[in-house]
Image (tube, rainbow, N blue to C red; front, side, top):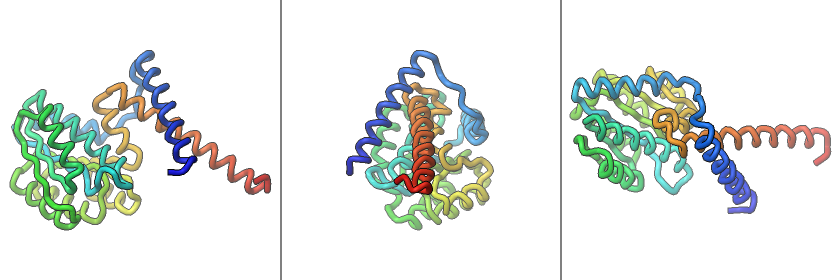
Length: 238
């Protein structure tokens, strides 16, 4: 890790702390509406009434690699689902691509999920994972397929399996090559940065809200820095 990366992380940590203090003092900020997550809340109510489980996939990424942030975003939604499942008696079924993510799934189940639901470790190979998760959807018949995290071509296999079973879907990804699949194959989608704001939008926890605020501030600073750099480079100053 070079000096620039360390400086960036330090600045982000500083803004995160400032944002956390701001949320604790002034209260929770208003977030713009996200229809996909509002539908997710409705799906929880339907699950309570029907007794059918939810299925959650945190994607085909790992913790500790380049797609860690997306994987953690998916795991954050799984944590929220397990917490709601424990409160309202909703079974939550989850499938995993990699053991590093599955460990978090077991931890959430232990803490919040006494209402039932199963945890499946499929395989660390994308095609096999999608086929295995599709079989789980067929056997478990969940009321909702919640797929959020790093995905590739295998997303279409999973979403098509849910569609063929008449299962509602909420999905999200950030990879530009996958976004067309997400948008065209699901009625309720999260695009780009919405993925990282999902847990904050649902749980309204100060730590998660502070993270969203800090990300927005750092994004604004980066845009300003890039713009100034381009102007200075064009003028020959640097």
